[in-house]
Amino acid sequence: MNASLSSSLRTLQRVSTHWNIPFFLAIALILIGVSLRFPSFSTHAEVFAESGLSFFYYAHHAPLLQNIFEFQIYNYLTWLPRLVAVLTVKVLNATAHYHQITQWSALGCSAIFYALFCLKAFRSLLPSDLARFLISVALGIGLLGDYELYAFINFTYHGLFLLIVLPFVNLQRWSQKRLIALLALVVLVVTSKTHSVAFLPFYGLLLLLGWFGFPFGSPMPLGNRSNSSYGGEVLSLGSAGDAFRNRMLPGRLWHGIMWHTNRSHLFYGLITAFIGLQLIANYIANTYFHFFRAPQQVRLSELLQEAIFFFLKSYAHLLFPTSFLKASYGLSIGLTVAVIIGLSGVALYQFRRASGRIASYFFIYVNALAFINVFLLVYLIQSFPLEFNNWDTPNLPFQNRWFLLSLMGILLGMFVLIVGRITSRNKQAAVTIGILLYLIWANLDYHTVHHNYLTEPSQSHSQWSQYHGLTEHEDYCIPINPYPYLLNHRCSELEQVAFQEGQFVSSRLPHYWIRGLIVIEGGTGLSPPYSLVAYDEQGNAIGQAERLTPEGYVYPYFVFHPKVTPHRLQLVNAEGNPFLPSVKGRLLGRGRPKITLGSSLQ
Image (cartoon, rainbow, N blue to C red; front, side, top):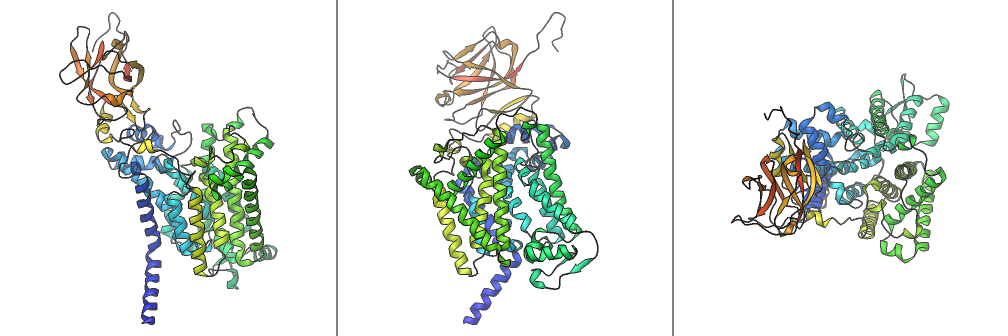
């Protein structure tokens, strides 16, 4: 019976490894977890902010080339969401389902970014399959993330996780098709978020080491398999270079982050090139590198001081609950520094052992990456308050997606250093579960941004099924959740209006083509069957607006078909009597050209 059970377990393990069951299971668990946490991004998908203003608008109106290099909204390259939007609108012609396709694409891509860590190719970095699986699911569901990270406009932040661990992957274990797919995914990530600029020093350095450390020539076999975990081949560095390699870098790391084929050179070379392209786009758009063109406001020493402060704060808010940080500033900062010193000591100890150098190199790499990211953000904004008495508050970095890269790097460095070198699988599992439970408890009260108002139907309710048809008009104004974002074409907000005694009268009304009106104050008091009617100068009704928003919605939206040029707008009930609420709204439309003598009215 024991033999039968052992055989069954071995068979299950072979099937799991062959079909990458942990990979697909992680995707499923992440999708289920995020869907339960944030229904407005899943079962009640909506079009938020730039998802309509930028991605849909340009996918609908602009050619493909303009979509690729459009900077008007984001001021940097955003290729992956733009590609999804273009495929949805132009290729699938699925405008009616744009909100669902794009949002589920965002959730699916986010899950894949994390689930890839479950693949056996990442064993060179963290041997424990269970540890990688739990880390993938915990980060995917949102251990370090906030609400907005799962919106279509921000989901590519999750791709930074893949960029962090990628340099330690043995590419020789990937088939050509998988490698091409991985390359395409990584290129789309680095050309979608400006944070990829922080990776340029590391990927650029690895590329230089590859090119200058491996002159092209005949391959030289490595006779000692202990120096080559995968039994591959490398190009000779010469006697001195080979001695340095064998002394400083174990074979597993050497094959993980260095290259011994032209294909690998091309892989990392393209990634570096596209990160450089994002850097150029940042410079052209005058975002990250605005300081090249503007006078310096602060000294480098001050920026370094702020960067060190926020780097320490990242560690503190990752390790300790806010309640503890509030209790004692001195104790919390002392423990934070002690943890960093302790981890650094472990890294130095591991470096003395050939089998532990991967963890040491990774720890140094991710902490340097985290600090560079913090420094770039401080340099960019130059407005973070350097107030040590705010040590206990989440502040900008810890409820803000900008610092996700730093937090993930620090977290992964700790995991790889602590869990990666434990030999017993049972101990690996116990330590991994223990660390995750502690981090979940420590992060419950400050890593969750409260956006309940965005999940309540009265505050944020998707009307895309009614709105999308308006995009076929020559001009349209569509309020995007949450208002005040407007998806508009040849149409804009004209002015704010106040209704008194159920009507609005303005001498400017005859100079407008009114497409619609959105109530911005007092809208919850407008319940059907009240409607908005336009009257001409003689008091004749010339148009009645259609109300697209549901009852009880905070921002009722009225649309005229066709647009009207009224002298008076009035709210009336089902009997046609004036309705007398106290509300404010914004007129949507565009100005009419002035009519002069001899002009045509055609």
